[in-house]
Picture 1 (cartoon, rainbow, N blue to C red):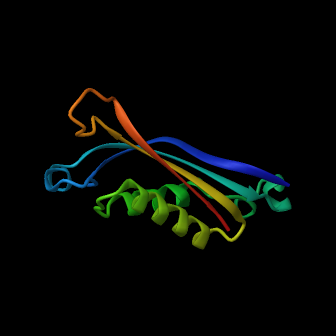
Picture 2 (cartoon, rainbow, N blue to C red):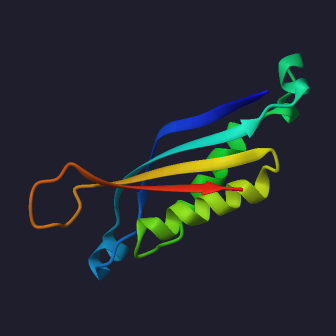
Length: 119
């Protein structure tokens, strides 16, 4: 049986941005990740091994968010790659990363990049 496992509204203080001051002072980010997966029968027998462990999924996101990058696309791609590597049952990944108050010269609550990767 197929389905989705998602984590929404993960918050991080991270050091992503094109400008040096973004990578030195950091900013608030929000991450949403959705994993399309094949649930194993054991998941319906209350066995964690038959599904995506969202604690492990969070650890992947946290680890990649801790690595400073210029582009959110780079971070999203790394999260998707690591998720596919960790979970063989994952079929596709969608990662949305939002940067709050981006330095665009005007008022903007957040800028968001979405990355989709299919196995």
